[in-house]
Length: 160
Image (cartoon, rainbow, N blue to C red):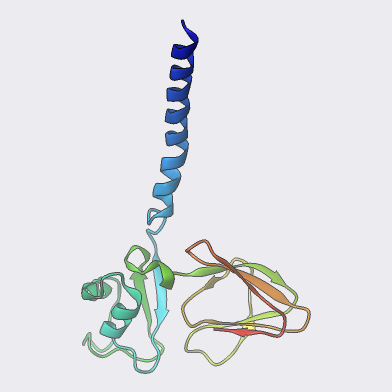
């Protein structure tokens, strides 16, 4: 076998190996890990249409919300403050999906959207749109977003 043929075969094998390693990772970064449901707490002024417009990739798919939720009033145009709606994660815009608290040093508090009271934040806790994190002196936190970005929350901070 000539040197050229050897290098040609080696290059082909290397390309196949690289494709086998890289392509599945790219597919997984898309939406394949999002088979679950995300909870959204209803706050004053929310409607199914408004929630769909804010959260869903395609707001016209708002009737999809009815498949996963029982509306107490029986009327999809009437939802109540404090209700918790379940939404398929695969339908949610990536920027509106849950983030995770990946680092917590000292005193870090958490308040869910629509709630008044803070409670102690937990490591690996899900953080949703309009949830609030609060750090105190000598405390900090790191949050991992679905876009793979990490944000560091400095001491004495309030972040919504």
